[in-house]
Image (cartoon, rainbow, N blue to C red; front, side):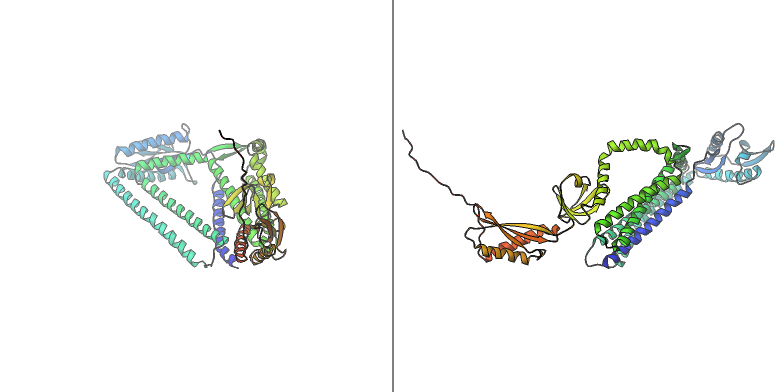
Length: 515
């Protein structure tokens, strides 16, 4: 009941984060549209986008935009009084600035079903307003005020940066205070705290990044020169992200397409992990199966969801999987040679999950590594030693090396406690003392009963071995230590001596010739 109450905050947070992430990815999927070849080019003043022009009979859209932008820069830097007018020539709408030609509004420039006359009137108002504003922004008074405003914004942003840290810490402490307190920490409680810390850390970083990006954009837009470079950088970035870089069959994919596809695959992996955790904690936990079987079903389900979901995502995305046949064959050969260890470990993991020679919770020994199996993954197995050190062992070692599984099928194991006593000891008293120590020890089973064997006469001692049984093999070192402590105490009580090695030295005398 306690574990169930502890797990609720972690599951609630994990489910909310998963829902937000999936909603964000779906919004990206609907927002990002296939790149279409546009025949329009932007016209801007000091990084402010005014409108876009299309192709004409003599010039392309880009050429027209370059000529218009050049003329607008000349007008702004001249500091002349700006006067924008419309003149009709040969049934065409001509826009003039200070009685000099700027552009001709064509049908290709018209948007939203407007007429060229209406479109020209809208552009005249925009040009007149933006040109006057651009000239004002180049004055000394405006630059001085903008610098003072930038300094003030930086001071406020720095204070707000620290305030966000205090606010997030306050909310985190408040949430932890409202959670129920438990007398001792469990694994589930620890995972809940880690989930909360991770959630608050990520949200704090995101909030601070959003703060400084907003401040940077605001200060950049105060000055004409910085706004121009920001506008150019943004255009180059958008063009780089939306330009096709990969062609598969008849489909072309840009960088942002690939990033969204990568985000969808990442979301699929997060969703598969959430479903697996739900399956493990809400369904398999109440089936009565042992822990190893639950882990095997959960891991197989996770990889199945990822594999099927990836295929569905690629098909929905419009990627023809048949066009990847040759690429997949080449990758298969590369994986066979370059990633053979990974493939071997993955295959070994599947064998371990199906044959189950080791299971989660077993106390095993692989080479010099000895500990409890905490997790069996697709590539490696996590073992926690008696020193509480986590060691990641490749799955292939469990099939290639000799493995001692103290918990396989029957966790009851026998421990050997060798003991040597002096030759003048009463062996009946020794036997009684050893049996008394075994019966008093916690962790030693009464059935099978402890047994004492007299295994021989040593050089300086009578050698016995005490055999005891335990159902907790992971505590064998503690049980042996407690037994030795109690045996030494009982030997002193019954005046039984533990001998030390003795050696007899014989000296032979002889006559030596002397000169």
